[in-house]
Image (cartoon, rainbow, N blue to C red; front, side, top):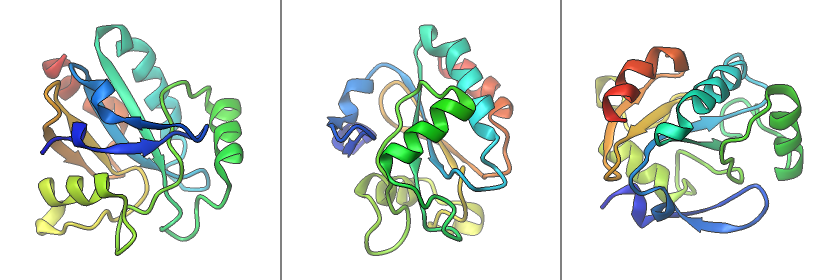
Length: 158
């Protein structure tokens, strides 16, 4: 299994296969609009702009499981991201990342890349998963890890 075996729904309602990101380095991030880490959108967008021509894609998955910090609908989320942070990387419909209703992609990511002390659960918004060009998980990063701190790891994969 790789991330290419999964589908997800974009904010515009279109369901796409993650297979379309083959041969690209992928950074998957669970996001939220009302979180202390929300300003990371700025660094994520800047990194995307710097490296998209080299083969980096960032995929944002809004999640409302952590203190209800993503209460909006898809249209509100899209507007917030675009207007406040100029986000142009693909953003998906709101998903659960933990529990019985977790999106299958996040079940896979958390199983294959457990967090600190082997915990599989995503602990908070802006947890990041780095994926190589073959769709394999390389590393999981905590919400506190700034996107700019990932650039060396990303550069090695590009």
